[in-house]
Length: 145
Image (cartoon, rainbow, N blue to C red; front, side, top):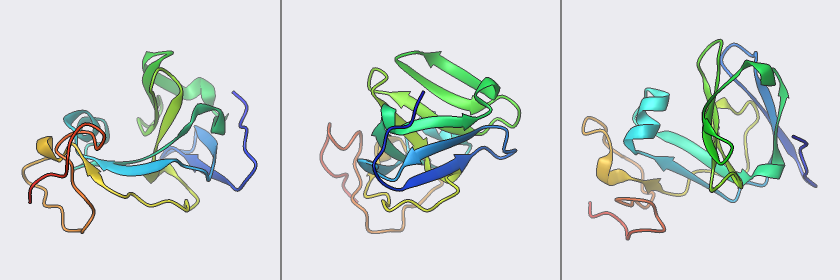
């Protein structure tokens, strides 16, 4: 997969450094997802993701160390050595959700909302002022409280 971009490139990697990637600093959106799947894949209260077109993302090192859960149209990609979740292929394979915690460089974008708050961990309290949505932001209105 070849990275196609005209602007600044960011790098990212897994915990052990076996898998590395490059991504354009041209993210379309960034959110904090509180769904149960994101909590389970990260082992945390939520996953901060930044979405970008697939052609603007490319593994640069250790692609043979990727452990893929899913298929060509949608999957999670982990390092098979350390287990880090690096990215998810979504929207029928057209977009990549980069796990923002794996970025080495700081992106220009910041998460702008919390999604799937209706299923967030009951032990976690959201303390910022970002909008909150019970489900996906495109599917529902802001959550109450």
